[in-house]
Length: 260
Length: 295
Ligand SMILES: Nc1ncnc2c1ncn2[C@@H]1O[C@H](COP(=O)(O)OP(=O)(O)O)[C@@H](O)[C@H]1O
Ligand SMILES: [Mg+2]
Image 1 (cartoon, chains in turn brown, blue):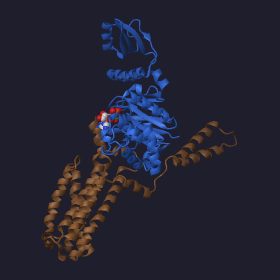
Image 2: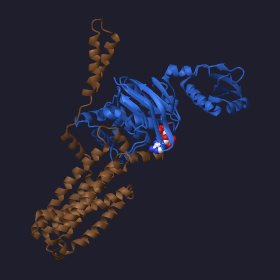
Image 3: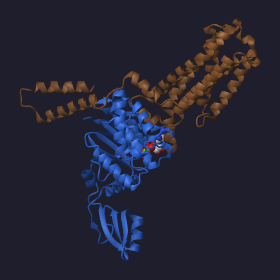
Image 4: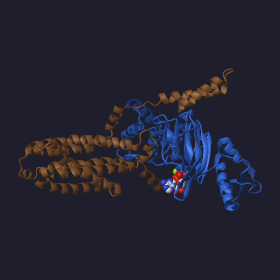
């Protein structure tokens, strides 16, 4: 935009070149030129890998730590124990681990939501939503890697294929996310993480009792698993979009209200 | 050099009109936006930053609508909101790094710039302290530092001096003058003395409308002939206070020295005085109210 304005200015000057150079125009052009130089040089741009690297700096380490702990515990159970209750309900530890992971992701993004930084961020080059989304993608990636460990161990033990194993773990993960996002969106859990934790516990109990039903994990039930997975994924995506959308503006308007 | 223009800018919240048909052009230099609480300063600034969509009118940067410029415009922009959210558990350094990431500044550039700004705002020694332990004035300085991270060509500061103690105010003025004149700086305030020595241009806003605008001499000439000084007894002073706009008042011996804004001489023996910015502001404020009373 700047450039076309600049070009127009130059062509206008050349049209007049049969007369002596107009001092005022010369000054104006100089100013424009200085502006173009300033714009290109003073504020360097950020490359994509750099964007990711910068974002790593802001990951909530406590949440990732909790994630790692969760993974280690569930993996340890499968590596070591031949405890009778694991024989009875082999899917229980992995199911709980994925519920907790689903909750941790929402806790990580509640940080973005709760602190009313949106107004400040909205005036910056990236908007808050983009950064929050990037953060969630990164955290989600780490979580998937973490969940893969118990999944592989459990898959070996139960002689279950990778796809089925993936379903068994992602469904509770996504379902928990749905419930947690719903809590966020209705406004209960906005100020404190307590409601989110409570909802996570409820989900853990539900998943835990479901995981003790061996018939749920028969090959015959796979069709149901796929259907549930598709439905939950759709709800999850819709809720995630709503949460990110809201992170942008409503909070800011609310802040304006509170002040006056 | 950039040029920021508003054309008949209007914003309504439900029935209430917060900003009404505001038009002005800003070029390089410091511009002060003066208005009482609720005058619409914050709303106007949010529209200038592209945070709120106007209900009418346009904001143009170099003749182009800012909504169309998008990221290119935000790159030029530094903004300090009236009150900003922050992560209480972040240190000052970490917060500034976060803002640098939002502003898409590469790490090496950002780190050098953050050092510079921490020193400039006098926060170098507090860089590792958590923001929740900061005083209001320190938070304000962190806010100013983040606004300057990308060396903005357009700097918009909403009540930057609110909550600063006198020493910090002086520091803030020095900081503004050290930023130089080769950028657009718009700062809002309801305190006239904040602007006296630093603003090149003043916009006065009342109830959403722009009521006066101009360079300081131009603004001062508005109040010319309406400022009086007189020395009266305490009883007379009490009467004058009921009927006139008092700019200043101090007791002297057994009488009172008064500075009064009025069209006619307020008392016998009143002498005309040179208007200061404060007087012009009182005059404009009062003029508006009188006209309204007459309706
Ligand atoms: N988000 C909002 N919703 C409704 N009314 C608002 C909102 N923001 C501001 N207002 C109203 O607009 C008017 C101007 O407010 P504001 O721009 O904050 O003034 P100032 O910054 O000059 O104190 C006020 O009367 C305020 O109540
Ligand atoms: Mg305000």
